[in-house]
Amino acid sequence: MRYVDSAISDDHSLVSSLNVLSLKIVSSDIPYPINVYGTVIVRDSLDYKCVNIFRRDRNNCQQVKSQNEDLILTGPTRGIVFRGGAFFEINLMSREDGDCNDRQFSKALIDVLLGRIMKTKVGIRTIPSWLSEVQLVYSHVRKALEATVEIKILSGPEVFYGKITACTTEIPKEILLYDSDVSGGMDVGDGGVVQLLRRVVAVSIDEILILNVGANVADHDGNTSNCVLEFTPMIQGEDDNQIMCGLYSMRMKVIWSTLFMPQVR
Image (cartoon, rainbow, N blue to C red):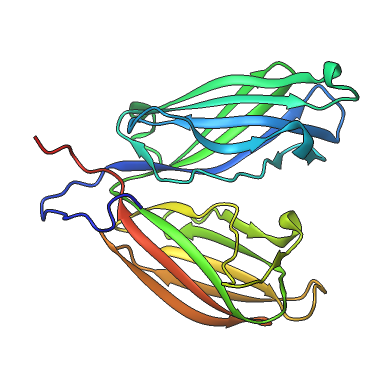
């Protein structure tokens, strides 16, 4: 949300962006389940700094139980600026009994270049490395804006059980923002703001952002009530909507920002 309060000229040009749709282990030389830890970062043309999309240490592994299971992503925390290329660096380890027995599971570089994806909206790259094959699925977002999502529980049980995803009208594949099966449920304390796994989505100014909410209708019994909200992109500003979904009254808020501002000389 770098330019929420900046002065935007009428002739401001929007840049492209990328959404990371999924990152999964499609094959492994190690029997399942596998305890995976390490990092996956992306570097973009804004500053080439590390932007984490997956980061776990040895004491906080993700257990991958079967082939084609998604890694649980927690980023990026800002929109990816895509003006020619972006680079994904994968460094994953497999935890074994004893620190010295841990094995390099995947180590690879994936370069996503603008010229390769001009004619497609969704790209898929599968990279074999060390003891696995890792598949990255991403979408190319033209004339992109950064949508930062905030979700606040206004009333309901003390723990939030449910699932929240985002997608756009052009790319219906859902981006996971929150899942109580992953987090174990969030305690709703003072403020009631849901701690999302991911909170930033790139949205084309010509599309609509869609938030899908599934919330329990009884205390963690598996039955859910589903709500769908649509948000129209803005160059700047915010939009919110209050809903009743399952046992919860919720405020869904989206803050809009441009991704890039040219340097004034």
